[in-house]
Length: 152
Image (cartoon, rainbow, N blue to C red; front, side, top):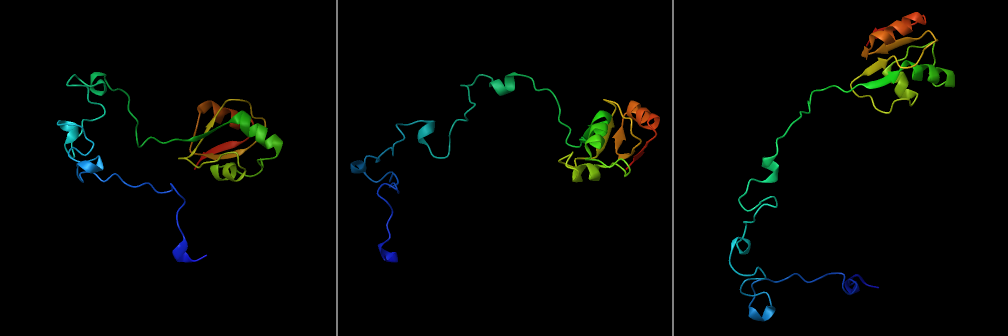
């Protein structure tokens, strides 16, 4: 086999339409664009949303809502989950529980903008938690169990 003998398989490459090359080509005169009008001209097409001069549906209906690009998203964890992970041995209760320790224990999979502790469930173990935010009831439950919570 020689490099100069290499060829594509039959049908692997299709010839391009050669437009405007005379009547015998089948694509002469109007070049397959039909007769006159906006669609026959170059560079000008109606938008896909054009509705014949009536008010388009995208402008007819009111828009509402707002997505704040500066909003912070927190990774949340519940006290019941913390207790469950301590019992399972995924978290060491003697060390401080922070977003880094939860990431290394594969409890959280993304850092996000911080950690928020919520009070769903019950905690019996005294733990030291470092978080960005927490609910008042979560703080009460942690202190009641003999632990403490502090801001990062």
